[in-house]
Image (cartoon, rainbow, N blue to C red):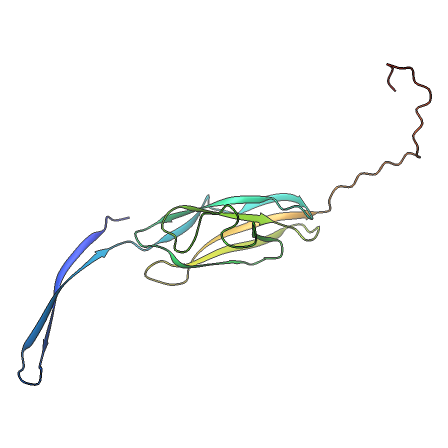
Length: 173
């Protein structure tokens, strides 16, 4: 971004006070020019949780990079599939997430994949919406993917009890 530039000027108002025209009032003013906030996910691109058993809830800590001179404010979040994806702990920014409102530095989001059914190709867009200091409704979006799977099950099919017969002490079968 560009280094902030300070602008100074004088505001002069000329008015008629009812007794005489041409009356003036002046006030020195100053302002600092700054770049709007920009939020981006780092790295870019989708994140794939892989194959996850129904009932498991793996998480990923996502990095959000901030650039600009103004803070990102009015921050809100949305998952397009909040059934299978969400915040660790249930709320923005997640249990170990460091993002807040406003955002004026790099921060993190703690997101989980919680498949409810054994369904392949589950997906959700996580969108962070914010005011960049100039325009409301700027967005940063991260696509999340994963496959829900039936949890593994193990069954022993031998008749019970299993009889090893007579075994000498110290021997193994």
